Length: 178
Length: 249
Image 1 (cartoon, helix red, strand yellow):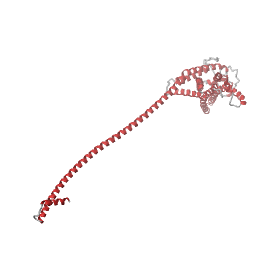
Image 2 (cartoon, one colour; image 1 turned 180 degrees about the horizontal axis):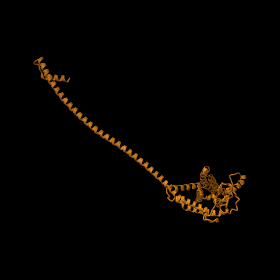
Image 3 (tube, chains in turn purple, orange; image 1 turned 135 degrees about the horizontal axis):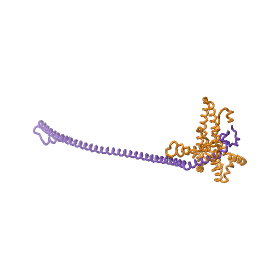
Image 4 (cartoon, chains in turn blue, cyan; image 1 turned 135 degrees about the vertical axis):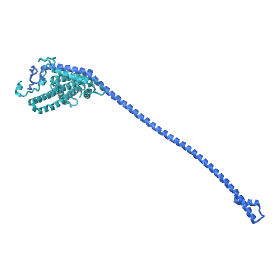
């Protein structure tokens, strides 16, 4: 079968041996191969390869662009977070200010109220004291009168006729002061 | 004929490689449309279908066919760039043409009853010599006589260099032979083996489980071979091209 010495091979296609070594078919094969390669080359270099290269370039551009966009969005998100945190801090500060202010107001009101109450209390106390003092003074006067009367009566009873109203009064006053 | 009478089996493993005129007659002139023409035409159509029709959407998110076309493009582009550097990229369309032709022709040859154009040494030798002459002419055109430095291994000890030069020279001229026979031989051998097993299966009739299993296994292997040989052919082309672009060792 494998007679590679088949060089006289101009037989028809059904000749035994390797058809690969039938040199009479070589021009035909080479001609059609060259035609095929030229067609493939033209199609590839004119249409297919530029198109694929474009698509690949476009895709990498798109990916690049999307990545950049994502980066920008991320930066925006970071900014937004910072702004949010700042707003939160501001709000906290404001709230604490309001609390302090309110506290101060309340304190002021309270102080005022307390002062007023104190003033009222002290006024009432002074009034009460004045009243007490009046009562005390009245009582003192009454005591003096009673003591003088009592002393005059006692002096009368002990030594009648020796009653010296002025002296008794002075003695009683001296006794009360002492 | 004589074989049939003696062997008993009716196996013609080499018949599948015969070249026949498409429209009758037995004379094969250089322009006669033959089954070679037919299957090379199918190769062209398949390549157009994949790379032109398949990518017509130009989609950012690719369809399946566009994705295949793109991955092939990327695969060969990266191979050319890795092996030959940036200067080699202007040869990318040529290399991609070679790769697509060999790959698609190999795969079309795996269709039962088809004709495998790459199983013919005339085809693969034309491809290999085209690469060989391109590389040689390009080497001299780009580097002048410095291209001969490819054969002068300056990193070797001086006494060894003439010997190495002879070896390098021989290996350089053997390149197109090995380059072409590797491809045609692999493809032809696999197809012939399948045909032999198919002949056994036909002879055994219903009890043909073992040959059918063998055909399946060899066919699987052939699918691998079809792709690997296209890859090997292309990568060797890149390696040879790199010699022309950067001849210093």
